[in-house]
Image (cartoon, rainbow, N blue to C red):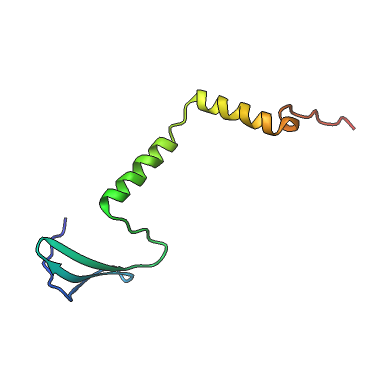
Length: 89
């Protein structure tokens, strides 16, 4: 981990596209401004952790959930519930 000391009004540059500015220091709080391309997601640490946990939960669907979803879809789209036989012509 790189550790830097900055004062209000100073910046840190990461690569050519990311600039972190120290906007204000008040007691134990530091306000930062971050300039980065829209393609780079920027989140506070606690928010990023929640997103990561939710993504893990969403990716861990078990067979029973898949079966239940399959049955619901069959009820909504009954015509696609049985595969059609290919034509022999």
